[in-house]
Length: 186
Image 1 (cartoon, rainbow, N blue to C red):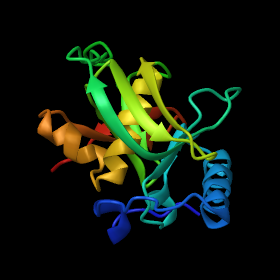
Image 2 (cartoon, rainbow, N blue to C red):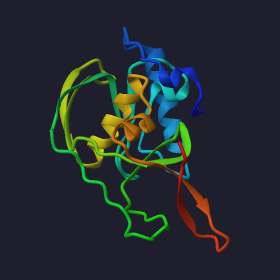
Image 3 (cartoon, rainbow, N blue to C red):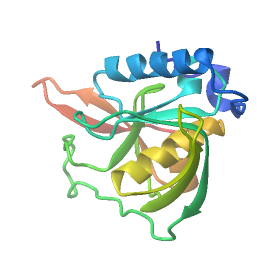
Image 4 (cartoon, rainbow, N blue to C red):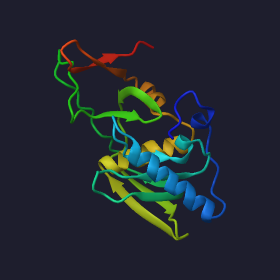
C-alpha cells in the first residue's frame, strides 16, 4: 500500500540500510508489488518511504516492459548542468496531453507540475546482492532517479516545482468526459 500526504515518513530523511538481509529483500518485493499495482497513473518509480518504511531504497521501472531496478543506499555523485526543458501546451489549450512533461507522484494523488531536472545523473548504489555500482542515467530515467532521491531526503516534488517558480495543477474531468488541467491556487 502506498502512503500519501500528509504522512510524516514522506517528509523525513530516510535511514541508511545497515545490512541487506531477508527483511530488506521482503521490503523490496513489497515495493515492487506496490509499484506494479499502481494504476491511474502508472508508477515508474517508488521509494521505501512511500510504503511507510524510512529506509534508503528505491526502485524504478521506466517502461512497462522494462525490468525493475533496485537501488539501496543510493547517492547522486554527478549531475549535468543541463536541465530538461518544460514543454507546455499552446496557449488556450487545457486538455491533458499524453506527452506533456508534467511530473507527478503516487503519494500525492492528482497533483502535477512542470519541473526542470538535470538531463543526466550518475548514481552510486548497492544492489540486492550487496554489490556496489555506479551507473549513469539520462532523459526520463534520470528524472525518475532524481524524483526518488528527493523522496529519500524527505523532499516532495511540489517543493521543487515551487522553488522553480512554476505552477501546480490538478486534472479535472469536463462535462464532456475529457480531462483538463486546472491550476492549484497556492
